[in-house]
Length: 115
Length: 108
Image (cartoon, rainbow over all chains, first blue to last red):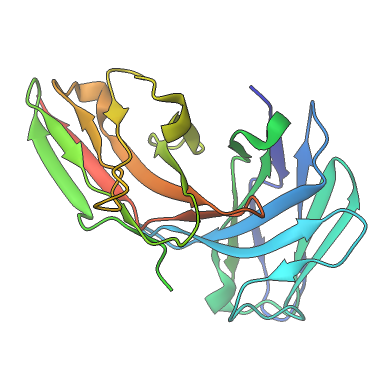
């Protein structure tokens, strides 16, 4: 199946700094990618839809100025957590639909810890 | 609005026993439903989708539009089935909305 890769897998940052997470589709192109957040022992919560060449679409309650999304190419979307706070600590997962949009392929996730 | 509901957070069954993980959905259009599984320390992966009507690893799921359900079933649970299971609904924009997940533990 198609592969989606995230980088880094885990990151620790100081409160107030910004962190960028990359999501790449390795062997296919993705005009759309999705960013999710997962708290411990909880479900994935869709944060935003990343659209190549245009603005991201954010779910209700997600601060667009806090979570900046850029979909610079057909294989790369980035999520930047700006001015991170401890409550932003979470597991962030991206996904991309495969060919013919038959299913979603998920990255391995990025664990962000803000100290 | 909660699109997908999984009422059980935790489910334990003995090896060899039948297992059913419940999923109900709310969607006005024609739903596309999926089951995803997350084994320990691994990424989410597709288990099965309703349009394929397939059986994967002995699991099946039938879409019941009348009851708006898509329950996942397996007649004889195995230890390797222990994992987190997510029911998901895909909308027309390709966004996937996930249920809260059910943690299945198969007791040897």
